[in-house]
Length: 288
Image 1 (cartoon, rainbow, N blue to C red):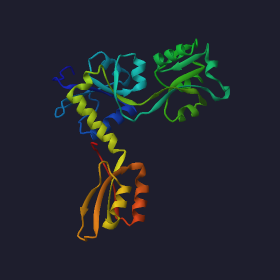
Image 2 (cartoon, one colour; image 1 turned 45 degrees about the vertical axis):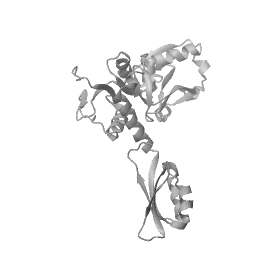
Image 3 (cartoon, rainbow, N blue to C red; image 1 turned 135 degrees about the horizontal axis):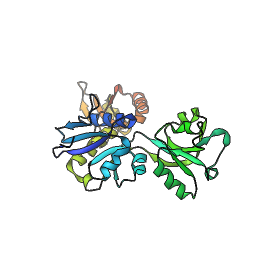
Image 4 (tube, rainbow, N blue to C red; image 1 turned 30 degrees about the horizontal axis):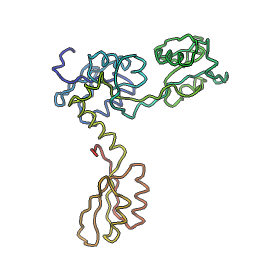
């Protein structure tokens, strides 16, 4: 466990949605980090990285202390830990909100929380928020299943991370006020110097390529030369589209990247213009 052979040490969550999202993203980026069992360390010799699997809550503490170089965790977990870390790259998954919630039938406002018991798995975040609002509440720290604490008589309200809000609604709770924090998975480092290391710079470049690729698709189509200029206005590409001749001199083949969310409309426009053989293809990674 302690023999890291001078490799970059990158901490990953050992379980949960954050773990699955981080591992899948890194595999797409060309890293070997998938566990076959419950290994604590996976060594990627080719990329000179040791992936260390830790409790999501502990990752910021290890990174902040310098034991681990960089890590992937949630903004909420990093902030609640109190560790001194820097966010160096947002990953776009694991999005959630840290919110107050109370029984729906009570129709409470946040001002009504003063003097109440509030259950949470994020005591530091909650205490900071209560101090900002000048609320004097008893913080009840729980490790999970916060929603049921009110029904069990442990708390009067809760402060918890919400994704869809379905679990809270099932427990008869409603969100009170605006979210205290918006969170997502991020890459963190102990300091900005670590982020400049070649292995970290390459990691961020690869992750950027994977995430950027998810925003685009490749469109290929054939079009008459006489309509090429108009077609290129529909698919201008990043710099310009790739154009290749066909055996029929009056036609050309065009290839261009387009925004994924616009791809169906682009296909409609091309077909209406006279484009044929229109194909939309996935892009696994790119550098723009």
